[in-house]
Length: 550
Ligand code: ATP
Image (tube, rainbow, N blue to C red; front, side, top):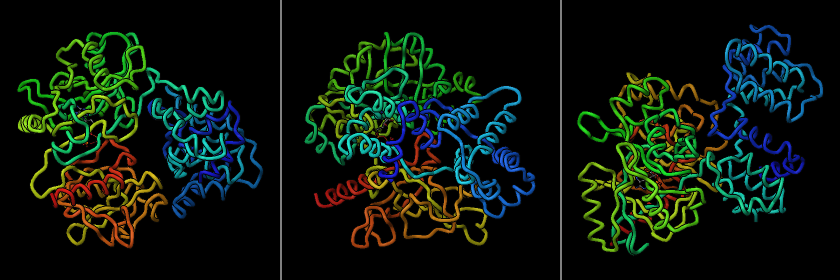
């Protein structure tokens, strides 16, 4: 895949490269801009009918047979050479994505019809899959980065540099364009207010002693179970981004307002947002905070269940702070925030004493929090990486893994008999960063209510696919395969070795979760690629072995 992409990139000009990159990702702009090409199936069918001159009824009939409008359109269009340029395709999709107001659907249909009329049957096959969200080339960020490196220097040696730039702006089109314009600009790439930075992530250890052994004297902070927000402020303009790098500004108007009053100057700040009950002052579970994602009713939620934004890091204050040690960033954060009702700074202690750390951990658990995050005082901000700069320690019960696992659902086993309208068990997979594939680790059949099992069946049937997706590696064959899209959190007793799972598989044995149970509803704040990784499962397995023997 890398070689195919690299040779495509070699043919691209500086004018076209960003457009080509966005379209490879099935979109026209970086995801955080929220510009989506989406067009309903019916409208795409209409465009196929208009472009081919075949009646809509006939198109629908063909579609029912093949299940893929891409195949339908390539069969129906007359055989001819296409005349489209990258810009024409990009501009048409941009128009489809951004047109609004009266007559929107007509404009969208017309734009797609024009594109199809000017394309060859083979081109049309792929073009219609873009607005349907079904392009699924399988080339993830890592492959695009590798290919950009190969195109530029002939091998993958520029990968780290390109990846660094990408982690600082989350815009692959911008990175590619910068690379084509001036290679040195990639080396000197800096953060930009308004472009989200890929969040740093925490490693895990299983005891307070190990934490102190690993990073020595550290800050230890409460781990709030809320919604991670990266706040960008430039003058009075404030934007909020989620851990998935989506724009969330509309969700928390009280944070936007408070930022103008409580944060000094221009800033990029990170923190955890958590709802509380105005009448009792109690923090509410994560599922409550995420309700704000619905477009309606945000104002009522602000009244009844306002949020506190516990800030814990500062990446910019007019200057890029990401390379500075945490102790300095934290001190700048504390000076830049005047604490008030909505924006606070996370609670912390500084310690090198395991007992003091344990006491702080227990206190936080006692208050109903998730645990603690210990932070290396000297570490820079590790954008997009899970490093020991942050170490989390979470509450766990006897006989339970020290942390929960986030798995992507790749299929399900059907419920039997009276449970025919429900899922029986979900086939859960973790993410393998190296191969960009999902590897199965568990069949999750408990922890769900019957209502949830019914809803899951409906939701999963909507994203079912006939065969195992290309980016899924599995031995178990479920009754229904699904496109990897939904992430759930599961807890388990332990990690074992099993011949049925592909996670970390060597010598016919892979890693598997023993007694997995679902402990969260679908995690709207996580993308499939944010699932726990194969590498983390192996680390957790080693940690567990270590805990048993020590
Ligand atoms: P988890 O499901 O355990 O929250 P995760 O994969 O979402 O894990 P990690 O980076 O592993 O994220 O764990 C740290 C997470 O904890 C952050 O993403 C953030 O959302 C949350 N958090 C809460 N309080 C803090 C804090 N004081 N410092 C850093 N992160 C915090």
